[in-house]
Amino acid sequence: MRTEPNIYVCSTVRHLLFALLRAAECTDESHYILFFADYQQASLADWHLAKLPANISVFELSRGRFRQQLAGSLRGRLCYFLAMRGLSAPAIILRPLYSILAAASPELARALADTRTPHLWLFNERNRMARLLRLLVRRFSVLEDGEGNYLLQRCPWWKWPVRLIRGLPARHRVFGEEVCCESVWVLHPGRLPAPVRHKGRQIDFLTSPAGLATINQLFGNHAISTSDAQQVILASQPFGIPGVSTADKQRVYGQIVDYLQAHGRPVVLKIHPAEDAGDYGFLGDRVRRAPAKIPLEALLLGATQAPVVLSVLSTAGLGFERYCCRIKLCEDSASDALYFQTVQRWVADPKTLDTVLRQKLPA
Image 1 (cartoon, rainbow, N blue to C red):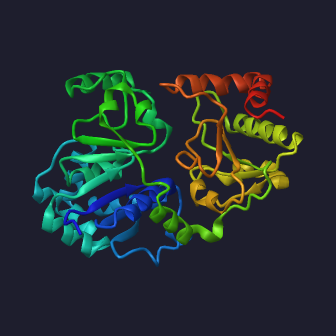
Image 2 (spheres, rainbow, N blue to C red; image 1 turned 180 degrees about the vertical axis):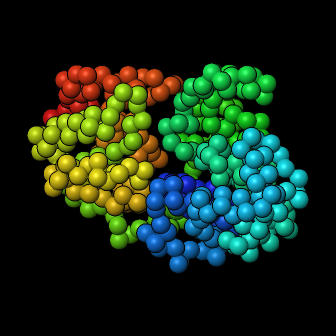
């Protein structure tokens, strides 16, 4: 077994799934998966982790508790201050960070002390926990977080000067753009924005035999029964669009469900883990509900027929096309502007959404 450990920083159930699948494929390496469960109010209790291979360890942590522990000492506060600004820290400043990790896993702490060269895997290198863990390494790799990996994301004007000083494009940012990111592992490297396309690597571990065995072990009893070829899994998502309210979102999803039912297509609703399930209470018994805290990809393997996975603009099912037919109502774009404009148009004129549904889901 290789001496340097792999450390994964996860904040969503999809992150956790991808980390487990990569770890299952790389049996000659040690893997330590840090899952900050409070981001989606999830819990490892939903995952059957007792029978994981000996080289894979998963730890449930809390972002709030992590920050609170650092705030308990001057060095911890300084550690946090430097991490949030993308600055490095000397070993003496990092001691509180090592102590927190040692409390979570003495084995992980020993591995870090022995090698000092862990391979850090991040899904979003800008979130606070990722920034803290980056203090322990000089370089890291990025694993696909979702559609955001393929977009140029606009930066507020007040960040432009600092980005220019750091040698980064002023107006837009992309995942994995920093020099210390050595590779970006995604499902479609060719779709990566130009500034990071040279770092692109192909994810090839999602449907390996070892990975599929791991998914069945963890989630076999949660699999969706899809004996009906007409059934559609509707994967929801937070909109986060200026001028689009929760009521607007409900009208959009209500209209989608109405269309599907009018064409004799039963609906299984898969609510995004970051959403409030109460937002979809208005649908009542018009839909079946899949477990919210289990990744959709993990639920597809029990399907007797490949279901349609329908979303507005989501990576739900991405990489698992062997087990489903993915349909997105919004077109892919190099920025989020088209997505915003499309949904805003649906809200202003519901007939335009009906037109899209007829094009994407003909009767």
